[in-house]
Length: 130
Image (tube, rainbow, N blue to C red):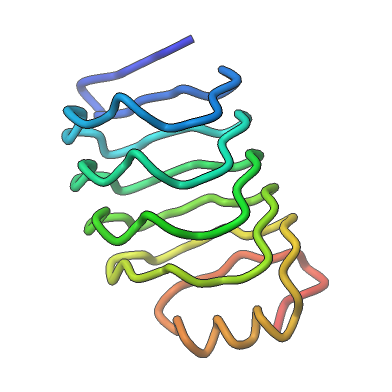
């Protein structure tokens, strides 16, 4: 079920049992990429997406935040429901919001990240609101 809306520059590839992000090299026009509910284990294959504003990788198998530095316009990142244990790799100056609900991140690591990335709104489970 691939849907690409060229007028809004959206590509939706959710619920496709995708394990690796590839084949997007020439999709540089994309602004919104929806890859939620797949089996992706690593953030990769998005280096050419310079116009990407929103990336949804919710409910995958991702363990580490990486591969985002070339997404120089990224503003919203959804990594909820993954296997992330640390908040790192957020070297995107335009990033405004990241959803990390339902991951395996300790409260001390959350507090550290909030100090390290004060410009980013980090969405967390209610029990970890600080």
